[in-house]
Amino acid sequence: MSFDVCPRLDDAASYVLRAMPDGEWELYAEHIADCQLCAGKVDELAFVSDALLNGVPQLTAPPQIRDRVMAVVRAESELLRAAGAPADRPVAREPARRFGWLAQLRPWPAAVLAASLLALGIGGGALIVGGSSEPPSQTTACATAPAGTTCEMRVAGDSAKLVVAGLRSPPQGRIYQVWLDRDNGTAPQPTEALFSVRKGRASVAVPGDLTGVKRVLVTDEPPGGSEVPTRRPVIAVTMA
Image (cartoon, rainbow, N blue to C red; front, side):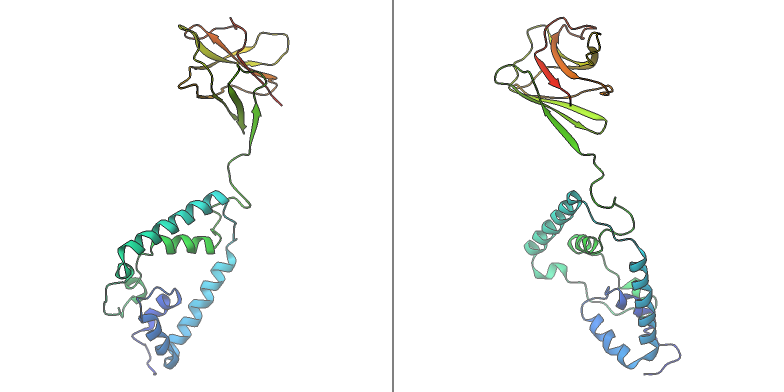
């Protein structure tokens, strides 16, 4: 086939992207076997596509992101299976001649899009190379706690959390308060972390700078807390 301007020239882009409706890609493949103009355009676009992919750093998705993406893949697969075979078939239409690659693009199912992102390694610098952006966490078991109570301190970056289970409620009219003890000859530093327990459980954010803190303490205090401890600690965590 020989034309100065082939009416199917604009379809070359959708052919390279494999974004044509079912059956059209194969028909266009037969067309470019006889049309030098369209074949040349396909070769040109394929070269540009390869160059763009090779020029973008390929990054490894953190396990958490990969798990979430694969969950989308599995959910989409279940939806398509439940809807039956016709659910993913495009509506038949006449092939567009002008700006054909735009007219024939169709939304990708979430499963296809998710799998494609994984296959590309999540390119373009969207993720930090080599793993998750979340800081690693350190867990320390409580050194002192009432019998039957389990507790631990979880520290990740600048945040810390005290997690307890099996702890009895504070005495009536009292509330638990968290203290930071630097063991420097001064009284433990009070914090605004006041809490009770629900079914023996609590998860309490520990505020303040933990630099130099030797122990994190918990005492029961009057409502509103105290400036200095008024009772012996019921919980003590020895910081590393």
